[in-house]
Length: 91
Image 1 (cartoon, rainbow, N blue to C red):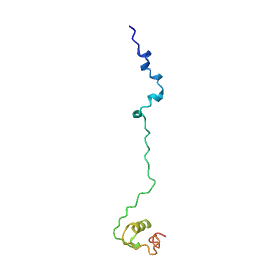
Image 2 (image 1 turned 30 degrees about the horizontal axis):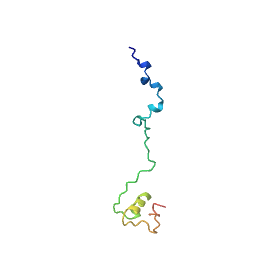
Image 3 (image 1 turned 120 degrees about the vertical axis):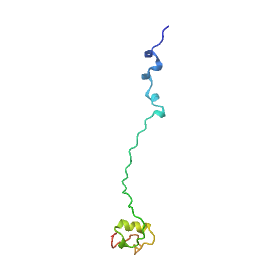
Image 4 (image 1 turned 60 degrees about the vertical axis):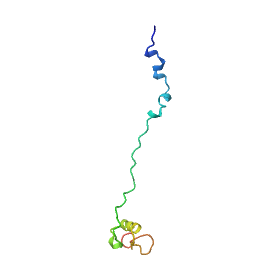
């Protein structure tokens, strides 16, 4: 009785299988790893509404703008143009 060996058995010769059949299983497909995205936006200032209302109590235009836009009862935009503390900080 002649038993076929692995070298002449068509079911074990993977070189004859086209690559599309070998790679078609989606569970074995390689997925590219995404690179981390670095933010180019500066970190938000850590201002807190603490009751200050006047330009003389601010230390920068950014602080005055934050207070004017986010805190109640501020008195920093005398001409109501949306720009606070124009004489001291935001000129």
